[in-house]
Length: 412
Ligand SMILES: *Cc1c(COP(=O)(O)O)cnc(C)c1O
Image (cartoon, rainbow, N blue to C red):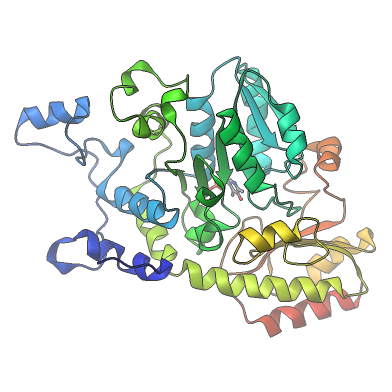
């Protein structure tokens, strides 16, 4: 049956794919090996002529494949490869598609561990330039003859900067560059990067897609927008099939199979369960975040609120145009940074914890924790003030959240 609605398609996906006994959910397949009656079929699996068969669980199981199909559907993509974490997905994209001497342009405002990974890439001989991707001119000026890829996040954590996603898509199309978009903060419930011409979409499944904070996972989705036949770094052995499959084939073989950051069937199942309520959770937590952002902006103890849904945000217009809402991520700075630790300690509902996109609100002071290792220079270049507090807003009742912030800030 063909369904248009995001959640309608999602909650009926397993059943519609045909599960034995009429089960509504794909079971958890724990087998590592998959056997065949005829050796010709085993040979066919190795030679890529027998499609849809499983072989060894490092490269996928029926359970991870069911999750991949769902994510492909979320992103309106051509195919997806799942990994054990979001970082495994990101590192697989960089390490399988870039070579020494290639050039990568990234937004300056990216996840801390992604930024740290750029240091590793530089040591392997990949040139990495970081720019303010809110300025299309800055990105265009950074393009060199050896540039292969542009990497951005939809809403940056913790500063909530939004790149000029539409214009970047046009630039990448024009220059033949791979356009890789980390959609973790918005999630496919709020935004599909394919609509701005993204080539590959990355999601950390650990965050909004699972939502419960009980499983790690990552995914790379090919949108079908990129012409792989023009990409130089595809190995000869993967150039035999339909060019539209080359990119993901190389990511699955060189990234998942050889580097081994595989997602287990148990975790894939947990993520799939959480994903069924993604749109509901994201709707509620985003509504909460907007109301909290407005409340905080009007509070005398607050210096600044970073949230793309506020008209004061520099990329308010882009966020309003592209995203169905501005997500559950916000950060704020206190007028008196010396009060930060005390205010965070006084909060009773948000859990003092790292992590994002959970059903529970999570709060963390940024400079002394997630951006401590980066050092003061990197923090300054990324616009991270010493008194910045990050909030991943959950699905609690709004009145409870506001009341908690009111009491915590009263002393500030
Ligand atoms: C959390 C996160 C990642 C990494 O995901 P893990 O599943 O924790 O490895 C990557 N990008 C962004 C934007 C994230 O928030």
